[in-house]
Length: 385
Ligand code: ADP
Ligand code: MG
Image (cartoon, rainbow, N blue to C red; front, side, top):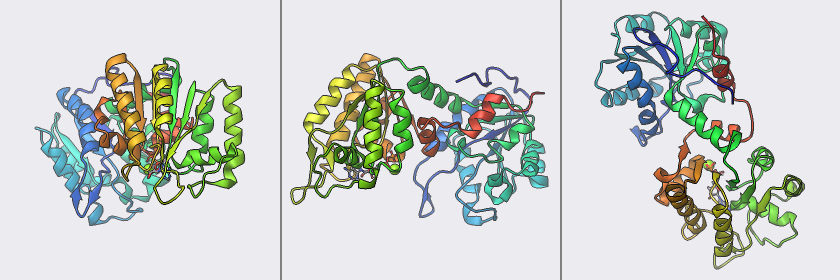
């Protein structure tokens, strides 16, 4: 990946810095169930505050589809953010126009203003130039610290860069460096582990990985379609028989690319049926031996129905093995995906991987080899002054 500007390259002191964050935190029954996204945003915010910038925060929240809605206001999120900071934090009930300008004018340098949900305006998701220009008027510089939103060509991710210089925040920087270290310039040999329920959702991912990695491990429901392609009986297991030709093509491509494909050689089923729910102990041992040979591992998708014990055993065994190798042998390990991270946490090793990506769709698109619209804008540097 070519270079991008970071907070090391710009002077932010007494500047109005517009920061795009992902504060779209999960809310269940009006209670915030997970503050991870807020916590991950603090590094950039605090550095800007230390440097006496005025921090103007933009985010979306839920899917209001262009309509203001009290239920999807960012005001409660701003209150939680305030609890993590020791500076003044104010809130404006519109992300553009006079309300925003007034709040910004009355925020001191070294202070924070959170602006209302971007998606209350249609222009955000439409990437409307007029709306992007309104956003750009809020400040002097634009910091993108929302990797998880950077696969979307929205005004607060892409359009705003036509009017302001674009700089990576610290969380963005960390995510991009971690991603580069697994596929762009990895220490080899590199292994990818792909699991999950269906091949159909991961075909592009597999096709991209097969040409980049030395080992491709397939598990989960997805692997069943590959077992079918090899002519094996898989009983009542979840599979997509219509995708057997694509699975066969990936098996062939592995051979021509010198990529070692590891498929389940034994499995775990419920007592009453022949339904593959997890990889078996021989497969776990086979994968662990291959891990011993690797310097880099990227993982998306549990290799079994980890939500239902005992079918979490294979995924948990792999997670713990990779965590130990990361801590003791300098293995570089990166994992992403909602269920994958839930699985690592279940195994008690979420913090022991080199990097865990909470970026969901953006992480997957990156693994698929796609160019993310917001990252292209970041690499361009935005408007050069
Ligand atoms: P992520 O959210 O990390 O991207 P996925 O959503 O692709 O991961 O995959 C997780 C899902 O795959 C889990 O719900 C898990 O139960 C399911 N899964 C894993 N192995 C199997 C299997 N053998 N049969 C059916 N579903 C499976
Ligand atoms: Mg999932």
